[in-house]
Length: 88
Image 1 (cartoon, helix red, strand yellow):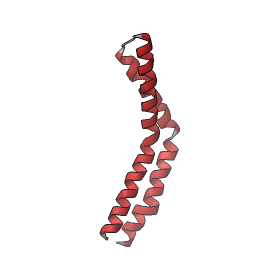
Image 2 (cartoon, rainbow, N blue to C red):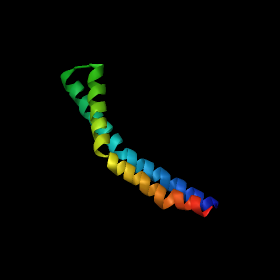
Image 3 (cartoon, helix red, strand yellow):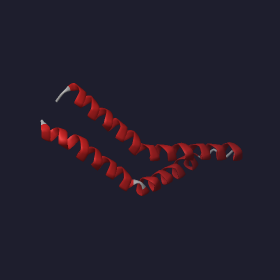
Image 4 (tube, rainbow, N blue to C red):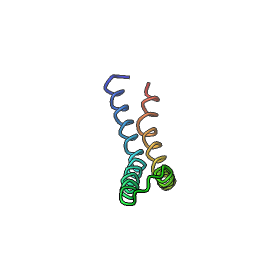
């Protein structure tokens, strides 16, 4: 396996990781900003108020986007990794 092929498959793998993690990170960011704004406006500084809604929203988004995530991983392996292993 050449260096270029290895770098290409690693670059593609990193891009797939970014695409897969984007929905969860976006929800965590949005929920963090919303909860922080709510805490700043109401002066409520409860620690569970920041943790529970954010984790709940992330679990919901993970459940909704599981088919997208698994499909992206399967496509990455069937189109990139497995053919490269079969050639070498």
